[in-house]
View 1 (tube, rainbow, N blue to C red):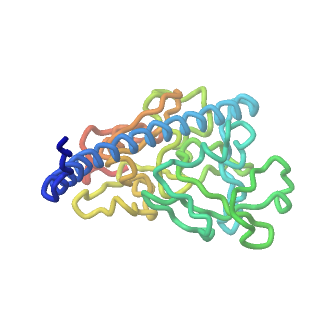
View 2 (cartoon, rainbow, N blue to C red):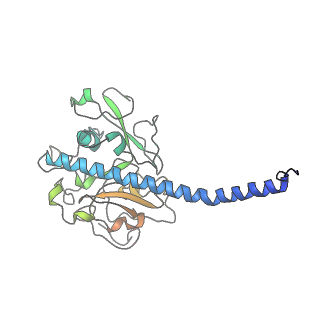
Length: 274
């Protein structure tokens, strides 16, 4: 009886090469599938935030969360703090899976396409508000807690504070009236971002050839939203409740504020001023 020979070295090398080639072909595809799954979860999170905002509004006279900043400019309570009792699984809903949570982030840390933002807010004891969500950071100063997240609230949707302030030009503000918003399907409420809020203006334009889409630009509201978190796309939820994924160049076609002159031209039009 003749014994069958094992594989020769050359045959083994050929098999290994084929396996390596198949892995090289499959890995990018698997990575794309994984990212698409993250993007789907991200949109689900945004819809949870929207639902929390609508329940909050229904219990507060139809008004969305109010603009809430101390005299020194420090946020008193973020939108997530006010909405925490109304958002399902708030610890998950405020994060995009494509943005890493940095537990050691210091307050005032601007996020990136791949990292969450962190900001100081008043703590429970300081604000005397037992319903406030404390965030997941340690206390970073007397009376303060660190809040983290990876989405921005459209600041033009804030309700006015006790002094009538909304954080920007009141003539362009929706003034927190959720059920009175025209073209609500075109008005973003929350979006992927590097900071917790943004007031986009039509006159803010982007030079796609020089802009850093990994870091964004915290100095402009539109720049806070211009991040390559989902393959040059971003996820948003709109004032009518639908969530969608949109190319960054499309952001000027949305009705961010009452005076926003939309355009179909990609990246805005440098000749237009708001």
